[in-house]
Length: 290
Image (cartoon, rainbow, N blue to C red; front, top):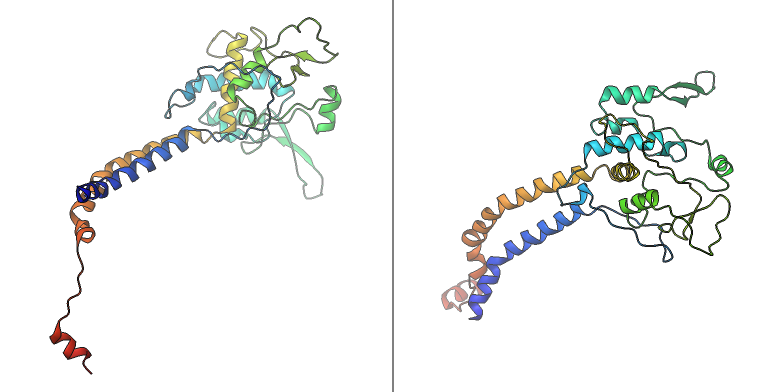
C-alpha cells in the first residue's frame, strides 16, 4: 500500500508543480501592484463599484472610457493637478492616434535649453514631453489654493485605499455637513476623505465636459471615466502583463503532457532502480589483493 502511494505521489508531482506555477502566474497578472500610502479610520469606507477592467483576470481597460476620462482630466482636473509621469507618446494607441497625440503636444509650449548661448527658450511640445504642470512649483500651488498643494495624479489610484473607488467617491461624495459640525472657510465636507474635510471644492457638474461619442456627461459618468483613466496611468503595463500571463499559461498547459510522458516513461527507471553491492571474490582478488 505504501509503495503504491509513493508511486502515485511521484506521478502527481509534475501536475502539482505545474498547477502551482500557473496559479502564481495568474495571481501575479491579475492583481495590480498597489502601494497604499494613506487612509484612516475616521472617514466612511469607499463604496465599491463594478469596474470593467477588474471583472476577470483577463479583462482590459475600456478604450472609450479611457478617452472620455482623459478629456475629463484635461478639461477639469488639469487646472490644479499634474500628471508629471505621463508623456504624450504613451497616449498613442490608447486614447489617441499618433497624429492626434502630436497635435495635442504641439498645442502647448515647453521650456527647453539651454541653447548655444546658454539661454532657455520655449518650443512646441513633442511626443516625448510630459504633460504640462499647472503650477511652476509647490509654493505657488499652495499660495493659490489657500495653503493646500494639489497632489500629482500619476499614481493616485495606487497610493490610496480603494484605488478607483476612492477617486469615484471623492468626486461624487460631497455632502452638507452634519448639524453641529464646524467647517472653516476654504474647506468642504466630504465623508469619504480622511478627516471628512477637504480643501478641494466640488469639481464635477453635469454637462461640464463635452465628449465626441455624445455620452451623457453626468457627474457619475465623469467620475467613473476619469477614475478608469487614472487607474491606467498608474499601471499602463497591466494589460500587457495579463496578455503575457495568458501566453505563459497556454505554454505550460501544452508542455504538461510531454512532461508527464518524460517523467513516466523516461525517468521512471532512475527513480525505481535498486543498487546493490556484491562481494565478488574473483574481482576482489584481482584488483585488491595486493
